[in-house]
Image 1 (tube, rainbow, N blue to C red):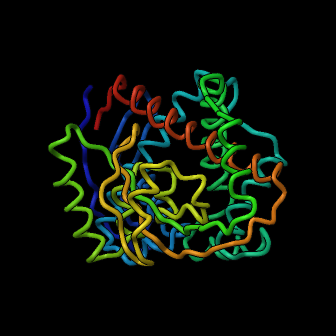
Image 2 (spheres, one colour):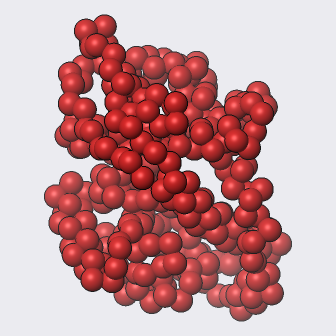
Length: 305
């Protein structure tokens, strides 16, 4: 694989685009990435990830560099599987709503005003959203039949805890890759050092290969019963604010931070809870397949840059 990494350091002022000469940085099977594309990705990431604003600009540029490469690779693969890079308008609106709601905004009009502060428009985001949506659809088509859900096991967990209070964790994650077991400790220590210096959210944005990296590693509230035994064992004795040791998973090495905990009465609709657990497990497996497939196609592509 021919892959030349170039980190572009240019003026970062949002209003200085006119003064920047357009240069081709990467050519990935005729998908061109210019310095302007990387700069726009920089703005896009800042607009949608408040945690990144604490990082220095060069570090954010590194993240933007990898992010735009990932998007172009996904676009190349999508074009082989779909006639058009387009999704239903109503579906696109719903995805946009999820995006601006996550920023605490109440309408698309508020979102447009917000994006103007970064010299962006909603139109700028539509292709990105569409690519991610079609990628997810493609992964489901390719790997959906390989998802294994043990409903009986999940039902048993729910039934065993109906009359008890259940502990819930609000968690953030970092999932990173290593080439061999010897690298696990060194990479973990490197990440922990950065966590102590710049915080968990910023470190997740830099190191994590999970989709949650875009939101600083946040995975929300998860009941203790939905965690596998290995994860449960590693976090059961942690206090709020503490970070786990490296947890070896099939798709990488996991680090978790306890944001908060609570105990809740289990007065819930068991059928709804079953659907929730199944959906969580399904998405977890799809994320693993997505990572595996992306790495596979990336390995076989030629990069000029």
